[in-house]
Length: 467
Image 1 (cartoon, helix red, strand yellow):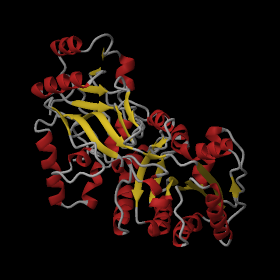
Image 2 (tube, rainbow, N blue to C red):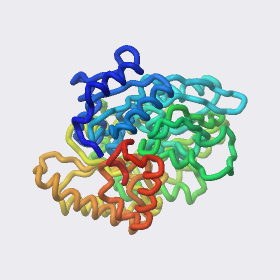
Image 3 (cartoon, rainbow, N blue to C red):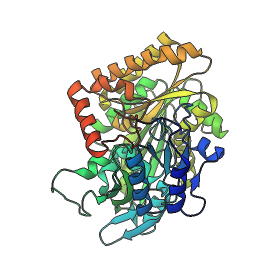
Image 4 (cartoon, rainbow, N blue to C red):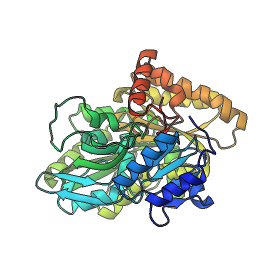
């Protein structure tokens, strides 16, 4: 793989010939902006950032770079948390932000065709205007691109009831590293025709192909939703309560966990003081139900509230207005930004069978004491997906660079022993790659490398990620 310094004047001339206007950029501001995402404090400068506007331009760029061995790193909104869009080998960053059109909303077949640069929340709002629902909603839905969601197989709070990105992707137009343009599947709800190339691309983190069009299935939009905020005197009790809700026969549309550290940081970041957070409260659950019958939903929420009142909880808050719901959701969705605002941090996207969450939380506390770090834990407790933020605070660089990887490896080994794995929704990218041996044997890793080689024999596309 070629390293930085490979881009020559002739290369820039070629790119300028196929991209009109100011869509070939080498200025410091653009390069610096494309050098990082939301992963820790990493920075890898590309040599040029290209902004294609349609599939043909992507095809020409990839064909050219493939012939010359120029590394190409696709980039969406840069909200990733595993370093998936970092151009660690320099070369070209392929910024997909200009490909930002919703091409068709098919209300008869409950489908939407979109380009990858559309912001996820914009897509959700557009289909909801037609009474349709795309339920996958990462915490960064107001800024992340749907193409990046495809690359990472994103989830979010409502994955508990509705599933993750892969459950909604019907078909993809992709450009292979050699410039070949192809569709991976069909715009049908069922497809048992050959290998499932569509699902292979979903979650491949831009290492196999560049997605240029996306066909998603939609569902009818639920008419109502209700929200509870439940404080607990013990974080472990909050986690244990999650399974009790399901054992009682209820399936919320979202069931989110925030420990006290997460709550304090989010409240400080937003500069809010309500609802109150007494010193005795160590965690909160945010519980949502949705559907089309408000009476049924109210009875369900009352039953969940009654169930939880028999546990060691503080005063349960029922959100009485849309504005209050929005405030409570904002408190949860902003945790990642709040952590980043106070310290460099490492984000571990652990996921275990739901009933094992109390054991995982206990292990995290023990590791934080052993290695002397502050942990912020929050996430999608309903599906066993716990985000573990390890803050640098005043840790020495030696501890941060050389001791923390041991703690993270110990954490992931414990996650594996519980039946879990490295990532539930953030992907492997750059930062989790060193730990892949924990969950995959030699044969599985060889097979993944072989798949990468079939798609990208010259290794130009997002090199250095996953495998």
